Length: 102
Image (cartoon, rainbow, N blue to C red; front, side, top):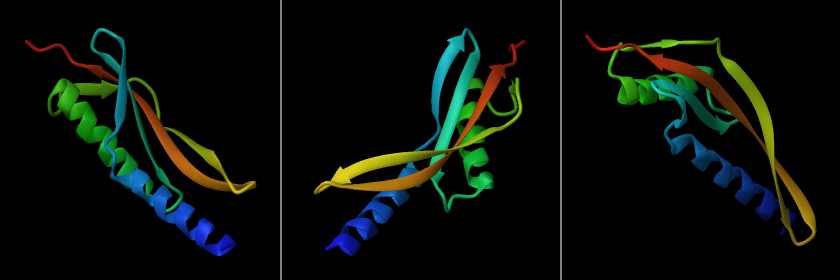
């Protein structure tokens, strides 16, 4: 039974890779973009999600990054039948500024 719970947690943590990058507008035309995935996701996949969201918000090739990549490894904890199950995941955060359109 314990192994089934662990396998289920691992399978569910893989679903996070299907979601697009999230964003928050921190000032007009400046966005904080965040993409995440499980420990098996590549840095290139996370960067592609960020690029796609930046293009949707600002237009293709109409933005610049204000800072370098910020990679973090976090851990999601859940409890089942009194047992703690931890699943690590990776988060990439970038700040993007839309270029002014002429």
